[in-house]
Length: 257
Image 1 (cartoon, rainbow, N blue to C red):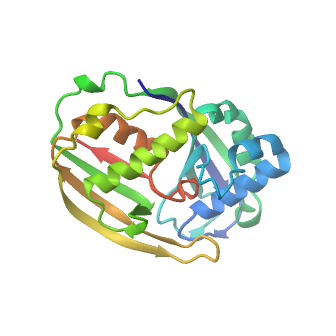
Image 2: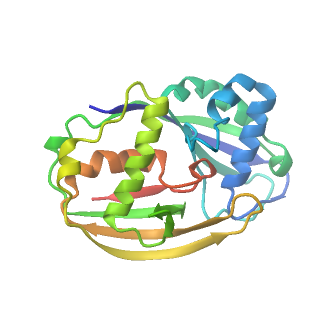
C-alpha cells in the first residue's frame, strides 16, 4: 500500500490599490513566496525550495492559480490561489501561511492577505484500489499550462501510456523523497497494460519568460478503455499536478469518470 500526506490551503489576497499582473500569475506567486520564506524562515526555505537542479528532485509543493489571470485588478478586487504541500512539508503549513502574509511586495505590493482557508489535510492511499467499480471512460481537463515529455521530447497530445508514465514518475519522485516509504507500482499494472484510445480537444500554450519559458497545452482529453486500476493515482495527480513547473501552477488538471 502506498500513501502520502497532503495539505491544501486556499489564500485570498485583496488589492488596496490598482495593479497590473501578468496573465500567467504562477511565476509571480512562486517568486514572491520563495523570497518571503528566504527572508523570514531560512530553514523552511531550504527544506521546501532549495533543491538541486542536477538531481531533478521536485519541490514538495504545488501552486494552483487562475489561468489565464486577468491583467487589471482594482481596489477591492481579490485574487485566490491554492498551495498544496506533500509529505513532511505538511508540517510547515503555518510557516507557509505566514510567508504568504509577508510576501505582498514587488508586483503584489498593492495586495494583502485577506483570508486563509484550509481545504483539507489528509493521507492519500491506494488501499482498496482493486475493488473500485470498473471505469471505461475518463475525461481529463488540463486547466493550467501542462508540459509533458515523451522520449525526452515535448508532447502536446499525450496518449494514455505517456500520461501514466509521467504521472508515475512524478509520484515516485515525491513519495521517495518526501513520503514515509518508497513508492511501489503494483506488479499487475506493469505486467498488463490496458488498450486505451484517446480524443483530444487541446490548445498549445507558449509563455515567453527569460528564465522559465513554458511550452505546453491546456484543454481536455478523453481516454477510452479500462482505466479502473489507475484511478487512485490519477486522483493523486490532480492534487500534486503533473509534468514540469508545478510550483509555478503548471500541470493542474481535474477529472470526470
